[in-house]
Amino acid sequence: MQAASKKTPYQGKSRCYGLFKCPKCNKEWESANSWANMGQKCRKCDTMVYPYQQRKLKKKKDGQVEKDKQHDVARCEKCQSLGHSCTEADNAYLETQDA
Ligand SMILES: [Zn+2]
Ligand SMILES: [Zn+2]
Image (cartoon, rainbow, N blue to C red):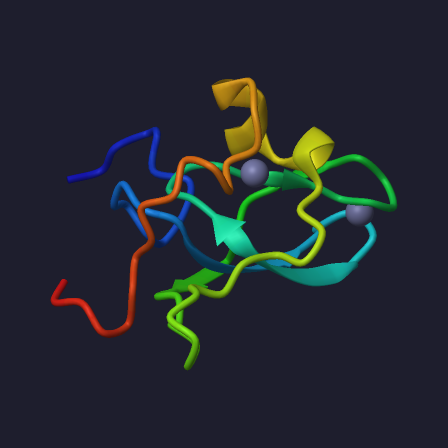
């Protein structure tokens, strides 16, 4: 299947960890607030970038799931589509869970 809407490696419904690289200015960053077919804007040049790699989130010892310390709501496509921070819409794609 070749869906035109498939913009990210991960296609599930949960939050996951994404690695980003801006094709314009080569800035790289990571975010624990990454979603299927959702991008984040580059801090340098404002290009919408989709993660080139995504993985499951890890659960910390205290039971907390990893997340961005300071999630940039204004640059996150998921947050913009929700109208609030995507950290609150939390159903995490966890490493400990069965796929
Ligand atoms: Zn950039
Ligand atoms: Zn977000």
